[in-house]
Length: 360
Image 1 (cartoon, rainbow, N blue to C red):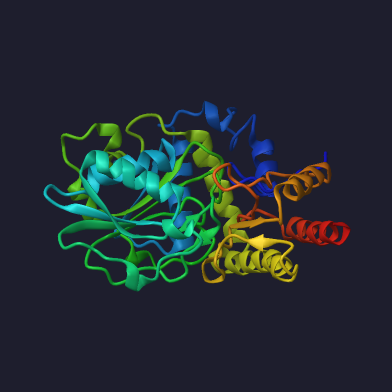
Image 2: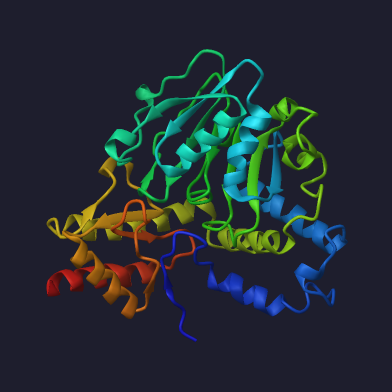
């Protein structure tokens, strides 16, 4: 079987070794005589999966004992509501930096819960860049500041992150977590849907500083309460067992690949290859994101006109490339090159782009 050249923005490509391991263990996990999705979440076998997954995350991201690691459901979109429900204190507000569609949605959901405001925005620039730190205005009495570290639709990514804040920094890292080292103590809460860099869809990772758990009010619905989820080891109800198992396998793969430091080097190499192809095309390909805000996860670009863009995408599909169409709100093209994307596939795309330009 020939594997697709999968550049989808998410769910995204998974490491082949992870898929092979899951295939091998599909009918019998660890001698249990059952598939992982058949195991009781209260069983010894699954408790070991939960514990190993947490330990792998702690090692890879240098997460200290001051933080709890939660495995939740509902994707990042549910976190748009859970964050203000749990962290927005009575009589206070929350600041949101708008860098794309997902940060706008997070702000809109927060406003349904309480007082939330724009701390900075690049919407007037069609979200081509990340605001400078000097442009971020935090109101007195804010409970937290929320950012989206990578913007899949517009192809931008934070390089200089807010640091030494007087309030907790909350970060949606759904599309770039595990792609580079993190200074975990800079964050109060990190959350991420798994389906881009961590595994298949179905599980949402949350890393929360333990003192912030005390903000979770007792009158919140139990399923939406960080403190309840932490107290039950993410098993207040049946968790997404298969997705957590895949997350464990992806983390094992990441560790065997050299950890986040090595993954960062590979991501820089892949992104540089595509951006060099765009920059050297003399305008045939035009990047959407400003150069100082370019994402290493999602490379967005357009061609000179819509018919040429359509021809590019049609020929790319015929050549075996999948998922290169830009988001419907932006158009153009988008190559998503998350951790598991092999360098060889990016090299093939770069060569295809060069050949297409030569022909047209």
